[in-house]
Image 1 (cartoon, rainbow, N blue to C red):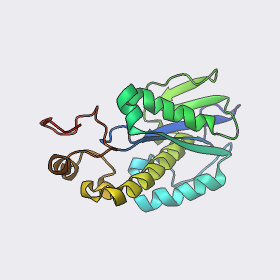
Image 2: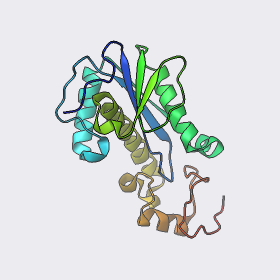
Image 3: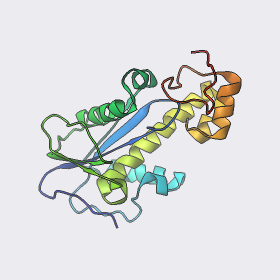
Length: 199
């Protein structure tokens, strides 16, 4: 069972992102404040859950959370600023959209760009330890998956409904055969051999 919180005496927001390593599409982030002593035996790192369980948990998180928000940053901004900065930007946007402002933030990973004057704690593999970070990972992942499924309708050649923009062999072959779309991240290594692409 995941821990309910890191700091029990304030509203604590868990933050995580999805899509950081993808070759295409936006990066998403979520911020979630759960009730004190919240328990859900299914909650876990989104990568350890089936798609069906992730979407089931999304409904439960949105129903049970004290506050939650999801935000994104587009691929053009990722190319302009870099993926680390834009991951933090997406988290900040999610925090901005919370209806209750947190007194403490816990973030999955080992780095974070300070949000206003709110103290934060970085926790490596935090989505496997704390319920609010796991909840944020699930919201970020499912909302990003929805986005990539929608983009797949316009660009079916890349298989984004299955690979969600990540560097699968199928996706790389499609880039090689078809070139890039307006949603690809030009600053990323889109092909292993880095052929000349029509940017």
